[in-house]
Length: 383
Image 1 (spheres, rainbow, N blue to C red):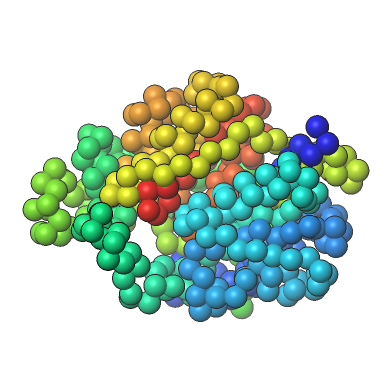
Image 2 (tube, rainbow, N blue to C red):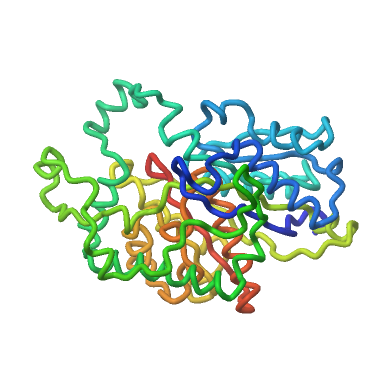
């Protein structure tokens, strides 16, 4: 198929803790994304003038991320003026959606080459900056869904309704750190990382992995979202979500090089993966984080595959209860779930996480000789 979209490469920055003093906190988000763009262009010996579009995800499009950060990063790299950019905001799935749009545009014949990815500097543009404290829902929404809760409460509700214990979440979270550390020590993570120059020096490894994490240690942490009013409304909640069994606030950028199979052949570049099926769906906005379950079921049906056909699953670890509920409903093999660690260990730089997951999946499949990978992410609003 002439317009068959393929992935040629994916690169990402190291993950830095998203707070003052974090490894990447002194780097402007445009400069952070610029360095990943330069890394992927140079290692593929790509003529940047051939790129048809930049599609970049970013959630908090305010402050230093208020202008099209992808466009700024591209021009900062010294690349051609004629290459356009658009920014995508589908909450935590923003860069995953950017890759979908890239592949769909190529399949439609609108593009030949797209760089799709995302950026989020959570130390410099804190989560929620774009709202500036204002009500984001409005009167009519609140009438339909009174008393909307935050994602932490949604994670608690999922734990309660799926029967997931604090012990199970802490054990899963320790596993995330241990698997990420194993991948780091084996040199697997280095293959996908573009080192980032900062005022304090070059950063080439993830700052977020805590190799010494154990379930016993995580059990000592206090729960994060206790609230008497919420407890009265939802007596089933057992208060079990902590900072240790949740994703880390993180700075990071990631970019995928997506092109038509025909163009890859013309440029002498090897396609490393193809797209089999896409799905996006929304679910209950109160539970908010459950849509990966129906999205998985629909994507498998579209692909004509069973869950056992999939060699590698990437389910974003927004909170430990999310992949654990997914496992229960999908009845998937736990050993294939986030086998190189997930966002609990590697962090969750909102707009960049989709292509970070895709990077973990692509490199993981290559390391194990697997054929099929499945990626899914929960997004705010129940998507």
